[in-house]
Image: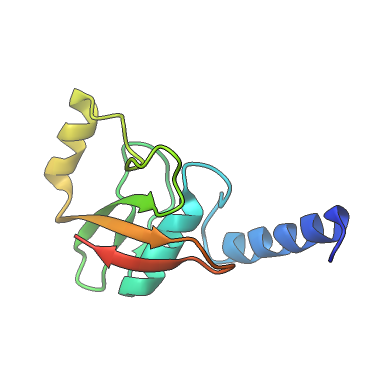
Length: 114
């Protein structure tokens, strides 16, 4: 088993890789799951935080991702901010994907999408 310092070094290496392809932060706002979903659907991540689209496809369609992890202890989707501003943002989104993430293995997988 690797020690904690070695794991942090690996995590930093992964973070640097994602930064090199334009993704600033894989640690917050469930960004790593957005990366997983975008990869699964061959979308390009749009680097940003709240009130920006999550991804786009090669035709310029914009996507918002919401996810649910199978291991979630509260069994709820990862959004609770349906403010007027959030709903207004969806007017500019072509597709909203609700993806179930199977996180039971080391590498999580997109299990199902609505």
